[in-house]
Image (cartoon, rainbow, N blue to C red):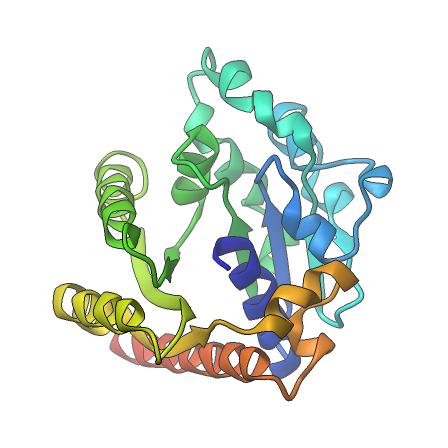
Length: 248
């Protein structure tokens, strides 16, 4: 339960609060697209076309069953993107250019679901973003992977996107009864302080079940602990954004 689960359910929670949300799926696995009910056969234009063929964002976007949420879907075509882009001089700016316009600006939030590895697609996402929200699984090697991501964010900030910031770290797959979960949280809060959200996303079977019904957990079981946690995360995110706006 990590990045895609968080993108779908945080997006659904923000939509439930009344925000408009666009999910941009740039993971070749296309799990966010599938999890939001967009079948592969229905993905006529995808983020591959957006990045490689200059397809307009407005033509790539599809509405989902969730009121206020749309998605730019992905397919396995994206798996060859790193090779296809390597010779392009502006290769790290393609997603930024694709999202720079009135179509993306019409949404309150644009959430980019990245590949699991630090690929050229991920760098495109970092260059195109205002901020990074990092799901941190409550597992043994989680902090090591986080260190590499933080280094990449720093490099992108120095070379291509000086305004990029870490919005926060959210603990996922959290089990209060588990010593390891508590230790990961303690280490994260000690090293990262206020970057770590107070909200923790628990291990919850309803969160795991929801994608098989092409639903967010917010819609699948609003009363579940997983749903309540993502609603709390959305509220905390909005509260942080309000404070940041006041301080700007």
